[in-house]
Length: 209
Image 1 (cartoon, one colour):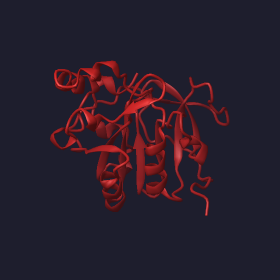
Image 2 (tube, helix red, strand yellow; image 1 turned 45 degrees about the vertical axis):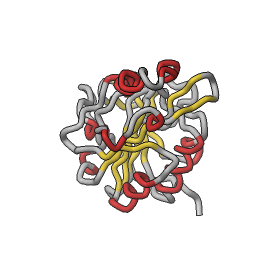
Image 3 (cartoon, rainbow, N blue to C red; image 1 turned 120 degrees about the vertical axis):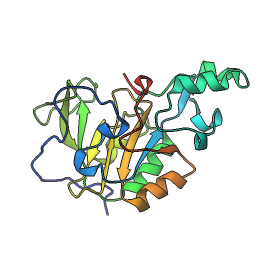
């Protein structure tokens, strides 16, 4: 069975055309906001292929989903000065994040929005305005989660079971899903996650472009 199937449902953006996402939960469609959420942190990078997880520098058990990478640097630089040599991710999927997402998502059909400015953008549909930027609607395919490719900023299913959202060039993304999926992701040793306090946690400016 294919991991992802193309949805034939008529596309409709679930996000406001203007404004800015302030809360972590603003990156999730309203009809998915009843679900538990996690913020998933993409690895930081030093040199081209040297990746490190946020949890190598701070205990995420003691942090909230409002954590900024620059807060990590401030906390860790005395004991781990090398932390200052790492740069936040820019939305690119690494192998471990890819594996965790594919295992968690399975064959759920997902609509998606990808920013029009990417070189690999697909001009299959007329762009729509979301939070003041233009995005191309599409459906999530296995190629959207290829290693080294930027994750689609927004994705969701029609059944209200799973969604994710991120800023442009993001260092992390927010997943909303059924409890068993969220628990599986939170326990997955391949990725760093923090539970989201819906309606309270604020996404820091360093989380994307």
